[in-house]
Image 1 (tube, rainbow over the protein chains, first blue to last red):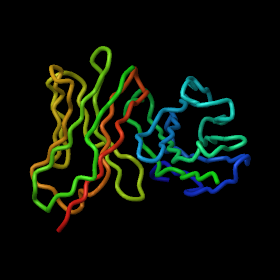
Image 2 (image 1 turned 180 degrees about the vertical axis):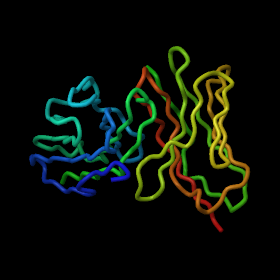
Image 3 (image 1 turned 135 degrees about the vertical axis):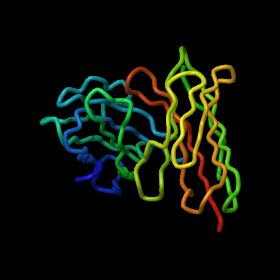
Image 4 (image 1 turned 90 degrees about the vertical axis):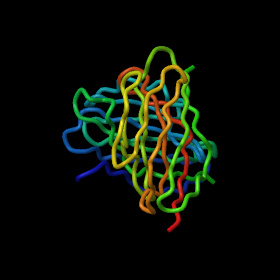
Length: 114
Length: 111
């Protein structure tokens, strides 16, 4: 596709459920990023992939959060045993080659944990 | 730690009014600075950037100047349009890829 695609756009989960959020980056983009945006806040960095390698996961808030990109294209952010404080918009971004500072963002997945 | 502070919204203006959205930052060194815009239902889009002191970024009539002495990167536009209604995020780049964003400022432009 022409842009970064995220699915689902909206997800409602009961507390304690596991969720999986998908990101399809722009074709050919080597770098992929996940951000968490709480209500009324700016996006906060979660993790960074270069191809299939997860080079930085310093922003993941707990060990319940796990991200993967097994073939260096599509990525999945998984949250286990969701808690209410996990409610947020999860943004995915990708960038081409060495220009990691120019990131193209998807529209996000809004997760609501009840 | 590094941080970005931007004015709270919403900012409501009439069409053709002058726009300023304030942004200040705290950082070690001299990071690159960015403005991103988010239109309803869409992802964040890069609006403009500046990589060193006194640089002016510009795009679509928007401008921002990197002011080292005041650690600021205020966004300005001389004449806003209804189509400029969106949320604007100021950000700094920490290292080569990690953005630190402000909380965003919602702009509403009335016809």
